[in-house]
Length: 159
Image 1 (cartoon, rainbow, N blue to C red):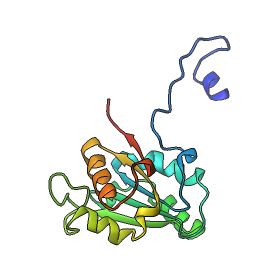
Image 2: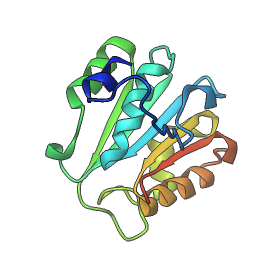
Image 3: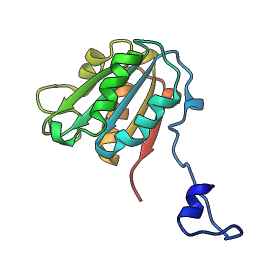
């Protein structure tokens, strides 16, 4: 592990390695189509998963929630994946619709909006990463849109 040596660790140094703890890995995939839903720093593991997962054009959708365009991370890379691999990307920008919603203002009902954004969502694996309350709202909408619980894979950013 050359990067450990460059950090000043020498061969024989004891180290504890942990994780990953979540369920955001390619081996969790069970359906031909995937939808990834990210908020804030939650884009980070999903961005890595976009490289790891095999998908044909139109088989992968990313819904990326942020307050404003300046908060979008990896935008150039996501646009590249859209152009080269056929990733569908939707940026959901603005203040939250209401307490308990995962959507920005103007989208209305969480479940209806999810079905509008991804009409075949009930047949997808859904990978979700973001803050606890927001993630809970996404899961609730996905379950109401008839996504089986076994196809909802989460990573939570809490301690």
